[in-house]
Amino acid sequence: MKRIFLAASLWAWILCQPLEAQNGEIKNQLKSFTPGALWKDNNGVHINAHGGGILYEKGTYYWFGEHKTEGKGGNVAQVGVHCYSSTDLYNWTDQGIALSVSNDPTSDIVKGCILERPKVIYNRKTEKYVMWFHLEPKGKGYGGALVGIAQADKVTGPYTFIRSTRATPQSWPVNVLDLHKRPVPEKYRAERANLNPTEHPDSVNTLGRDFEKGQHSRDMTLFVDDDGKAYHICSSESNSVIHIAELTDDYLDFTGKWVRAFVGRRMEAPAIFKKNGLYYFMGSGCTGWRPNEARSAVAPSIWGPWTELGNPCVDADKETTYRSQSTYFLPVAGKKDAIIYMGDRWTPENAIDGRYIWLPVEFKDGKFILHWYDEWDLSVFD
Ligand code: DGJ
Image (tube, rainbow, N blue to C red; front, side):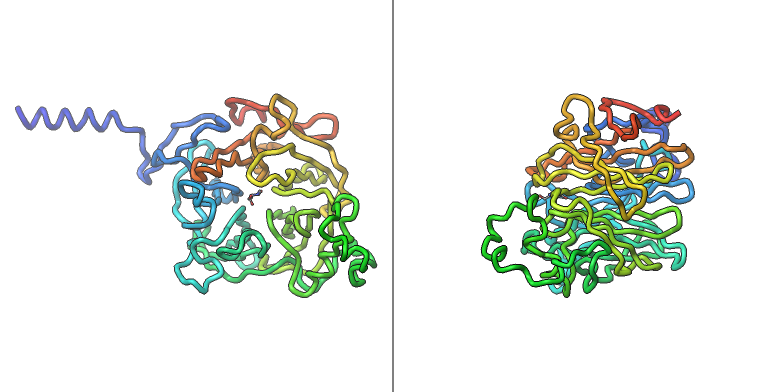
């Protein structure tokens, strides 16, 4: 009798559990996106992949992002880059830490450094997965303005840290001006503290100053074009100019071909997608963790010329990009022109609680726009 009761209880317990596949992934749990809500992974834990990007491979999406921890201190890297996988974009399986910070105090990626906005791309030639991220040495604030580069044989990692560097050292941009190659004029040197970078983005000549060791690279993203060429796009020159730089064939270095774009516009959070041969850009203003009004732009080539299209957000809270900041544009596999805006709603006072704002990209009058939806699914693209 006791045995029958135990067996029945066990069955009842099993039936109450979520439907799990053999690999532990919860199937058919979510069927929509709920921007700003808690997004739970297969273990019921809020997804921890901030400032992220997504790589699609053979039917699976891999989401890489900053693993944040609790409290204000959680904004610096205590753990590393977290990876999740999904076949439907709604339900995510925890794949663990793809790149771990180091306990070695001499490592560039020592625990406590700033490691932001990781992006992973696959290199067909080397058959390696390559990760780039914004890196700031531990305890130095945001003055380093470096990129970190790591590589792996398997998409989920482990990624091996290769090196850190400033962007495009010892090369001038395609659209360099003569004045960049001259010493900073004395009259601007004296005024440096009071310069308005919108009027005089070049008068501080950070470009010339940083020529040898390389240019600032803070907020960054990667973009792979249809021909397999990859580009690094970053906030440079003290966040006053966006730099767009071509990567070498193995995606591990800069070729030295690059341009300055949006000179003096002071933008962060760059993200790019391509549609019908046109390149679309989105970025934010520079207000730290506080959200601000987004900007968008279009160009016939990655090298420009870029034409600004204004704020892509159109509904209530558009002045704050729906309380988010861009991080990536995700093309949906198998659906033509279906692109998802991925943004972060930062919560710097408790970093781990940051939320994800994903919205469908829509097009109107030659611009892309973002409407707000409390809940939506991929059928909006049908
Ligand atoms: C805004 C950037 O977009 C974030 O990635 C982060 O660097 C914060 N600034 C830090 O204040």
